[in-house]
Length: 342
Image 1: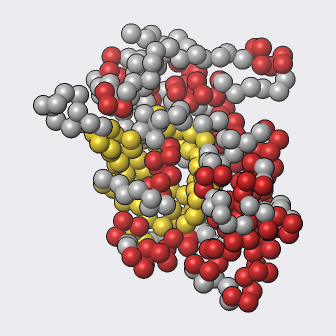
Image 2: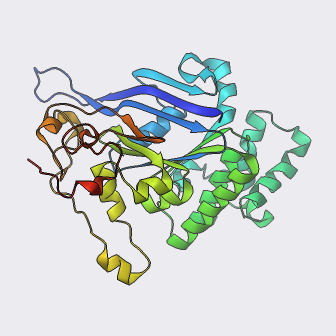
């Protein structure tokens, strides 16, 4: 398959001040050697707790932030070596749907002006055809021509998010970043927006990076899912495989939190509640970053950081359980029930 978007060993840090006036400035590692790739027509989900680095990844992907090191490529072109007019041209192929649609829309512009702005910016259609094309985009986003003259404050949350989607797709991008695009919406509206995104993807063939903290919602949208913890990717797997056969203890805990519609099945499921606090990114524990909360922690976990390796075809995990101790060798984490923890 054709790779549309790729991150390779990306690192991003932010200044975090000084603990004392005479001490050296601290750096908060928000993204730590992250590598991701998205194929044409595919949706890659990115899931994790708040503060794990998901939104930083989104901003890096669309060049709102520049990484400290690593490379970011759209098709065969490095976004880090592109600037000025050339970067402006590349931005046509990469767009973003923000979490808060209200703050991402200009309150002084009508829906027609908001959606038509990319058409004029990138000179996609002749001026005489922009009104017609704008109406088509709004209708494709499940809105009506009535909404064209409305302002953002006159719309509901779901309608504003549809406007954001129509604006993002106006330039016919090859890659779209959805940064928690449905988190602030009601459940019924979430379903409408998710189905809209899926329908548009089927029509256009765009690739999506779909970011969220709800594993069930992310799995509904995604072909593959990457799980982040404390700035790093700890597991990547096909969506159904990740839910049914998690290879990392953190993924196992996330999957156990999903509610099942059948009450009898739900009562028999084991709920894994993680103990301990999430470590500070400024004071990450040595070894595995999940070692302070892992129910299967071993001595090696506290001293050696596990690399992200392919444990079975199409599935990667950063966990010593697949190489040390029980040697799961790609088997799901629940096989460690008899594992001795220390």
